Structure formats: C-alpha cells, structure tokens
Image 1: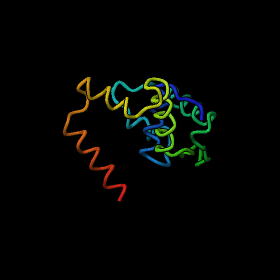
Image 2: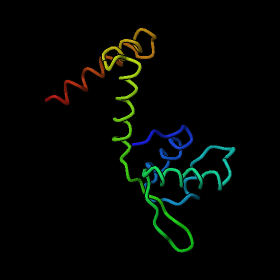
Image 3: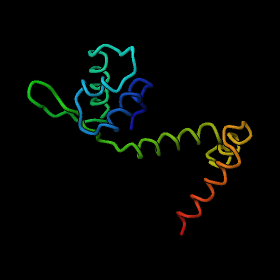
Image 4: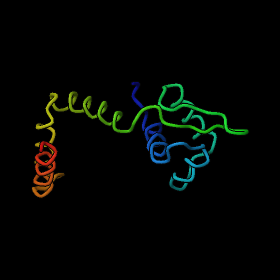
Length: 120
C-alpha cells in the first residue's frame, strides 16, 4: 500500500464517505475555495493508479469506488507512525499525548473502559 499525499488522503476521505461517487460529488464535499475540477480529477486518477479506487464507466463519465477500506488504511499508517516516532509502542504514544495534555484523564479512562469492554 503506497503512502498517500495530503491532497490524496483528503480526497480519499471523501470517497470513503461517499462510497461510489463521481468527481463532481467529491467536489461538493470540499470546502471553499474549491480546487479546479481538473485538479480533483487528476488526484482521483492518482488514487486509481495507486490502486486505492477503481473506476467504472457511467454514461459519459466515470464513477469511483474505494478498493481499500478506510480502517485498513488507518491501521497500516498508524502502525508505521507509531513505529517511526514512538519505538513501536502505543503506550509510549499515549503517554506522550497525555503529558502534552492532548488527552485528558477522562479520555484515558474512556479508552480503558472501551478496551476492557471489547475484551469481554
């Protein structure tokens, strides 16, 4: 799985949200000022080349569908992030964000509850 650029990831998030969609539908989800249609179409073609989406002919245009699940993408690249920046330790990552006050004690308690409930 090839890493996505920030622009590609931004477009891919919209495609995951929409499911099967055309470039015009993706454009509608982008904030103003929107990039030109041709820019978005080019990014979608890059996603197709990288095998993140498939294209199907639909009348005069194409519709695109994700080939990779959002959860699989997140799992792959979050694991790489943790490996590269936190010595492959999710505990060290959580500790870093807790010390930096990005995660509150209440959030940590919620995370622990979720983990304990998923183990049951």
